[in-house]
Length: 298
Image (cartoon, rainbow, N blue to C red; front, side, top):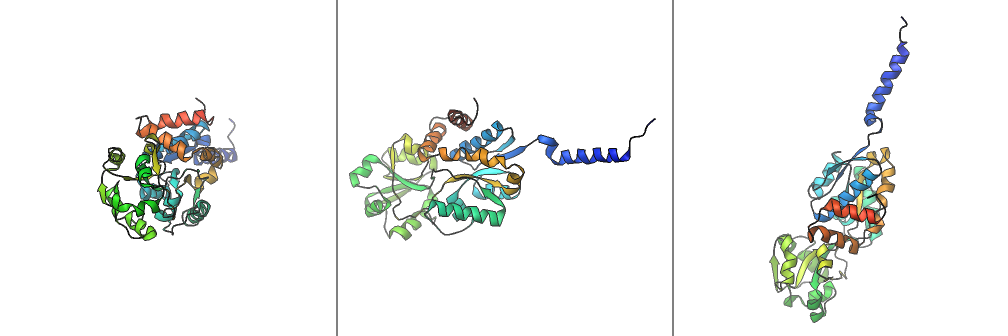
């Protein structure tokens, strides 16, 4: 009986171990996460569905938590990619100063994340989910208000409504006073975030604390006031991915970058409202959009 040469056996063992190290020779699993609000659920689903369409196996960890939780999970390797905002990366994660130029902000976070964390920012979308202040168009026209400066000039006639922390946060009333000068609202009503728009529409307040891509801005045809002195940095969204994952799967950049230029403020407001206003599932809204854009198949 002929014996199997030991070199052949060794080669088979090495090949088997190599395939196991590569995840079974073709199993490409990517963990996609999101933070804990509507827009993030939709964006996370978009990333997941684009990757699945390209042949990846996707594990979803949507609704993971706030920025510190999602960022740490990325650093710990518990997740591979999630949507983040340039302004959040600049101020919350890197602790840098406010900048108003979108390209400068993106360049700063891209470099900072690469140097400090070995994380990569892919292409940012044109949408800007910045902190905002909004009014009904009728009330704004009545007082001639279109900008933050106009609002401050009429502050003693205005009731502001928003979350309790807006009274103390640096990007809240203290920040407004630092940039726009000392002023006092007629009143500041604190409510749960989910109730603030209804209170505005009911006439209980004149100005609402908002975000630039809130679905309610479009649904209720509200006027988002212009931050004419640049208190807030831009908050463009982009996938942030671990460098090691991108090195192993460089095609991910092209897959996810295809959706970026399509995500404008108006588009994101509409998609957000489909979920928050019309009660649809984020996965269904994401799929409908991607199919309509020709990025995935029905």
